[in-house]
Length: 106
Image 1 (cartoon, one colour):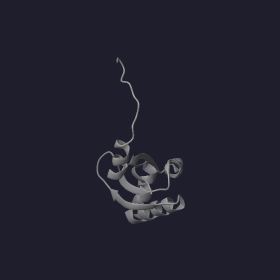
Image 2 (cartoon, rainbow, N blue to C red):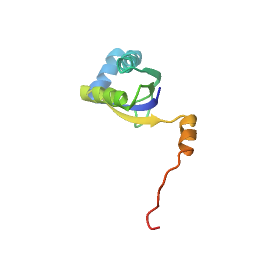
Image 3 (cartoon, rainbow, N blue to C red):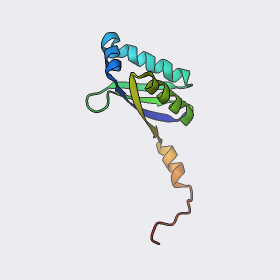
């Protein structure tokens, strides 16, 4: 199953929810949301800095990842930046594909 890095940033209302319910409650909600999209959460970490939470999720496809991000963002409690992750085997497969390409100016 494809893996996705989800970088979550809470809004003020989302942070109030974290303060009221704690971090474990948010991890449980994230796991349930991923499950409803046909996937699961590999890891869930709170962080200092520009991003509040880093999550790696297994999701069936890009549509499931988009649906999850849309549902979270539409809730108003957080926004998500989603990155598709590639395994070393995925990159190995990519290096074996022959692509016809001419660079600009040649």
